[in-house]
Structure formats: structure tokens, C-alpha cells
Image (cartoon, rainbow, N blue to C red; front, top):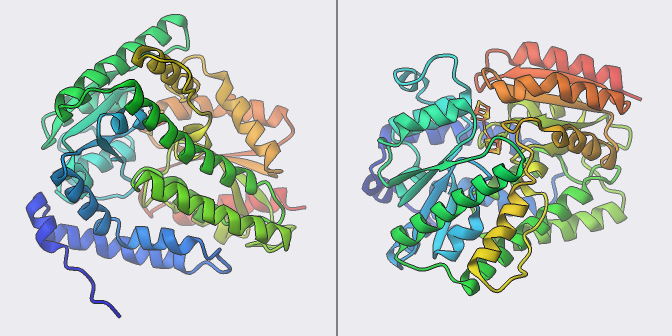
Length: 429
Ligand code: BJ8
């Protein structure tokens, strides 16, 4: 047995509060053991993701430190509208900074109103308590102006990051004008990336970045499709974990690991091996993104005897849908291609946004789901406001919907469990 690496000197150098960081890792470890390692009949390919999670603040951070020493930059973002393709093209490493744990909430509420969504409070809390090695590694942090909460929070947050902060101005309609606004935002991002990295983005580097991310997304499309099978070859929790690791891992290694997992799932499907019997009620979750370690709702659903077969979410199919074309022989043309692909992301901050409900129903049909659970974080107006619209659309397609509003705390777990169990009873064959 090899001795565990001591990462404390590295964390210290990054400026983490070691005591608080220990407390965070302790909680994370316990939750992971209870939620993930307690699952039965998991595919062997999940071993890779277990390893990634066990080293999420260790080996991966060491890789970031080494990449920086080799001249790369680390770029952090909070939203799937920040193209990883551009970051890679500028000799950068892209990391997701959204946080899914109730940590440092009291501190965060010194800067934010109490009625701010848990996702925003969480990244403030992680920053203020100095427990996020990803954030502390960033040379550039990109905050996209999407919902009002994030937009206004970034006005304060921009002075809290060690690295440079850049606000990305986003459109709020899917109009021609919106298309132009997004292109302008991406051109601004190119300029910032080139300045911070000291490297020009070229046709070749951008094509290479697009190809790398296309492969990563194609692997996720493959995984999503395999979940259409009955019995479900993988749990919703495990598929969510792959979707979450998407935002942290080395892209090539990640793609390879997801494809290996998919090879195994294909064999399982052929042999009719599933994580639950054929008759298990199948659920699609639609709504706000679930950042690590926010496994609360899928864990409740699956421990109540259902299986999650798809996510209409930015950490899920909303975030990974569609690839970027590599056609074109100028950087400008390739950026147009990026805008075309990113413009199809149907985040609830756009108005109107009918394709999101259509996509949710489509995922539910493809996965042969028995019902859809809409998940909104409390105080998230865009998703809470869209919930009844989405519910009507999905119900008109013949599927029942349960609407859940929650946060990252454990206080409402009992009440949620009761509602989810009643919904599962209702949809059981
Ligand atoms: S593209 S969903 S990742 S903005 S939960 S902070 S919306 S109040 S996260 Fe998002 Fe980009 Fe859209 Fe996706 Fe605001 Fe709601 Fe909080 Fe949210």
C-alpha cells in the first residue's frame, strides 16, 4: 500500500485555511461514503470517478500547480456559457467554480441578502472561508452576467479573487441582437485570455480546443443515450458524478474514462444487467445545476426506490448538448461557430425560453421516464418562474411532474422524502 500524499504544504501555499479545509474534506468524505460508496452493483468504471473524487483537492490541484509552473494559466468559471474551447486555445486549463455545499453561509450573508440562492452563497462562502483550492489557483475568474443574483453578486466578488476577475456580458434573448451580444462577449474573453496567458489564439489552437471539447461532449452524449436502456445500467447518482467531474478533470483523460465506462455499460445492457429491476420507476430531473457535492435530491429519489435516467440541467444534457463545428479558416469564423452552439443552451435566464420545456419532455420520452421532477433552488427566480410553464408542457405530453424548491441544507430532507415517495407511488406501474 502506498502512503497517502501530504498535500497540506501545497494547500498552505495556495493560502487555504487548513483547519476549515480539513473540516470541509471531512464532511465531503463522509457524505461521499454514505451516498456513493453505499450504492450496490455499480459499474467498475466508476472506480475512476471515485478516485477523482478522493483526489479532488489533492492530485488534481497538484496537476494545476504543475500546469502553471509549465506556463499554462488556470481559468475558473461558474457557467456553461464560458467556452472551455477558448480557454484551451489560450494554453489554459478550465475549472468549474460552482459549489454545492452549505459552507461559510454565515460569512456569505455578511455580503449577500439571506434570500440569495444557495449556489451563490456557497461560492461566496468557499471564497471567504478560504477552502477552495480551485478558486485560489485561478489566474482569471470569469463571472457571466446571467441571473440578477449572479450579476449583482459578482460586483462584490470581483474584489475577492486572487486572480483577475472578468465579467462576461450575456444576452437575455435569443434574438439576432442576442447573438451579436454573445459574440462580442466571446471576443472580449479572447482578448482577456490572450492578455493573461500571453499567447495568441490561432486557428489551429482553437480548432484543437474545439475538437477536445467536442470529444468530451460526444462521450457524454454516448453516456446519456445508454441510460435509455431498461433496466438502467447506471444509477442517476453515478451519471451525475460523471457530469460533475466534467468540470474539473483533465479533458482527454475524462473523455477516455467516460468512453471506457460506456463500453462497460454496453456490455451490461447486452447482458441485461441493471442497477435496479426493470419495473423500477424512472425519473428525469429538470432544473438548476447540481454542483459537487450537491447530491441531495437524486440521493432521496434513488433511496426511495426510483432511478434517475436523465438530467435536463447545465450539469447534464442542457450543458453538454450539441457540438461545435470546426469548419472555417479564421478565428472569427470559429468564434461564430462557438456562438452558434452556445446560443442553443436553454438556460432559464433567457426570455422567452420554450425549448427548455421541450427538451425536458424529449429527454423524458427518450429515456422512457415515468415522471419528471422539477428542481429549483430557493430564491432562484428564473427556474422557479419557469417551473409552472415546464410543468404544463410536460404534463400536456402525458407525464406527471413534481415541483421541488430546496437549498443545500439538510433541514427539509424528511419532508422532501415524503413528497418524493408519494410521487413515486403515484407513477409506479
Ligand atoms: S447557463 S443555469 S450555469 S446561469 S441557481 S445562480 S440561475 S439564482 S446557475 Fe446557471 Fe449558466 Fe444558466 Fe446554466 Fe442564478 Fe438560479 Fe442561483 Fe443559478
